[in-house]
Image 1 (cartoon, rainbow, N blue to C red):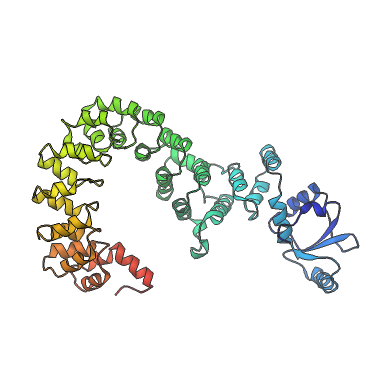
Image 2 (cartoon, helix red, strand yellow):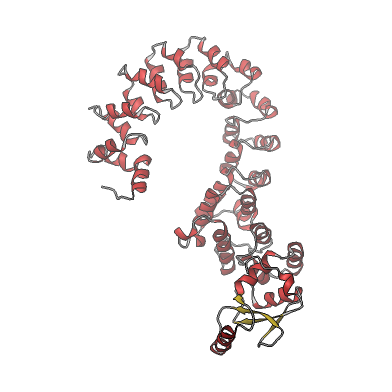
Length: 450
């Protein structure tokens, strides 16, 4: 009877053996009465539906078995009716009733009800009184937090008991891109309290995760700036979606670290950038990081060309203009740019320092890397670059230079066959053990470490 129509039971009687599961007994009665459904304790001719509940006692079991044999009325699990009741709740009426009554036991029952939808769950958990304590500091808080994690955590069956630790909230935040969920967690009382007061290390990690999370809304960001410490404020200052008003607020804190972080934000609003430009300390950060247009480029091009050359928002024309300044320092900065567009021209300068920087840059094309490999002067840099073609990495594996071999052992793109060889070399073993590419291979192949 999945998707059953509750209205069809209105004006009729049902018989429940045992107890309800998703609803507390009193709440189950409230929901039945609201729909004009009568619940009987014994069977008679008016019963149109029999429910098999939990914890049926021996006497009830005898009667239930007899009715099952005769099929006197349809028999379903109480879960099916509770699911239907939960899916057809008058949510606004329920929320108003819970707000006015302040009945936390009733609220807890709904929070633990697995059949209500996620949107209603998030509205309900915002009503819960955390009693000025943390997520796991009393039994009720622990139950609410567990219900939150169990509902939204992906593949929770693989992570036993994760719903009973702050790690569970951390992982949940890391997994989810649900903006409503992130906002709800960010506004819960334990988070707001942790912002204002000293908190334990695991809770602070949750604060950091919220501050970094791409779905954290402006409302929560504003609270973090107002009540958080300077580390959290600096994280907000670097976000690409921070509003101009919030950037102004961060600048007004007059904290050098926060301001330098703000100056490193590519999406710094022009109104804020203009104020920061007046302070010489911030100019090189603005040049290296701010989203560039022609007006800002011309302001930086002469005096701060080296910083400007590292800016990854430069157009091709901008990079060429800087290249033509004939400064090796500027060429090196350009060669390190992750949005490099003029590698061919830089290679022609035949500068060892420029070539080494190009060989390290993951934005350098395969063709350029292959050309650099032929020089033999940039082996360590090529061995470090995850974009170096596998054939070159394999060739470098025959080197006797320990610096080259160490770089290869740490490079996640190094062919696995080479890493297995390096694992047998005591000088390189620790690098291989911490190599993320090798670790992923071990997990994928489901094999242990040698």
